Length: 310
Image 1 (cartoon, rainbow, N blue to C red):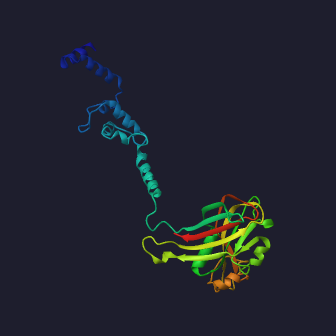
Image 2: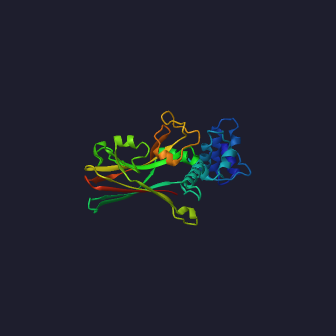
Image 3: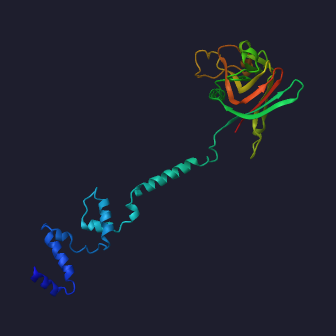
């Protein structure tokens, strides 16, 4: 051992301590070719600190057994690509872009068709003085959509309109029947059966405006307007309002057994308004609930509803 140290000192002057450490390591290592693994680095492999290389190689050890060349090659890979969760960055960014795209407003021509019901309710004393004024919107009901499809397809013929209102959980100003109807006249379809169960008022008017037909960049809307009134039979409140559309199907059709329309209606609107046969029916067209309106007996309930499309 002593002779060996002298020989090393002769070959490597002033570095005998380093040689001694290297010799000790060689003597401690098993003779299995490890010396080859710790030999000179590959010619093109970058030389750098040991800690980053070993960390990178340990991160990939689950998928492939590293060797010295692989470990040194990983030293040139960006650290960000080896960080936990780095692989999720791109999918997450794409997901965010998709959400942002979904949240963008619809493009021109993709906004859809809307049905508007603009309500005005005035409560007046018998002398005409205004007690309360309400102005609000309501929307198309699902069964109102059924009526629209039937009318547009020609499988339903439009009959008459009506308005009804009531309080869902308390007393309405409608007498013992608790639901008030405003109808065009006593002769309309199902008037006898309707007014046998509910309180009715007559004189509902229907007017139309076709301003939208003129075209242009901002034409006025086409509007169907219902106007009617009801004198309160007792003190009560209103929290639910509806417009109703009656219609007729083909003369051989019966709403008592089916609602599936399959053939064109062969009844005119004028005939449908007074029809009482099984092919005549009706649905709530627009509806909404409101903050209750309190009404006293004898007060006049004036209602105007403007139905338009956009």
